[in-house]
View 1 (cartoon, rainbow, N blue to C red):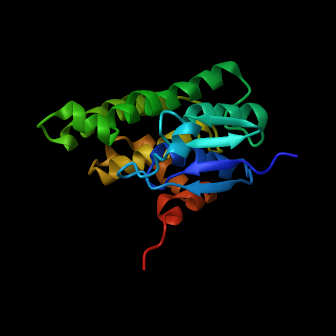
View 2 (tube, one colour):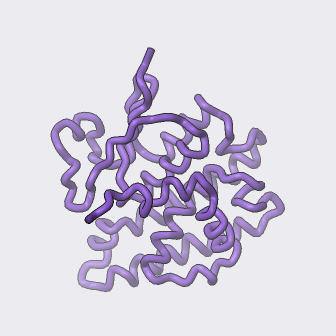
Length: 211
């Protein structure tokens, strides 16, 4: 029998929080290898052999090694579908993937600190990050103006889009953005922060405690 899944996590990674929250929603027992990624101290030969990209999250599960948060979330949904991150209706699934991709592929990727530093050159990194977060959140807010939006991004239980939204919204708050500019987004974010899956997996909860 295979052992418990091994999740390569970091409290410093918003992409890792996406997966952390999904594992909590689905109540999947797993072991955690927590990594310090500031300064790239996790990029040991052993970790680079596991994931040549040298990034977290990585999930070892069912004899597989899966990097990339969205790939992990899709695999969990396909192999452990309850509780669901995606609805069964194809149109609704497409809607949630749109929302998730706005965050994971169009917003987070260009506001990653390494990207922001390289792209902004001698300019203000915060200006760069604010500009692209605003673009992403404007689009996300527009898609939330939809009959399927409920307590969460789709209906009344957290799913794929919420797992992506919550870490990015926290990043935006920490970067000084006023989330009240996106009222639907802000309401869902604040509600999610009170949900047990996000409480349990919040970076403040999983970060190593300092004396």
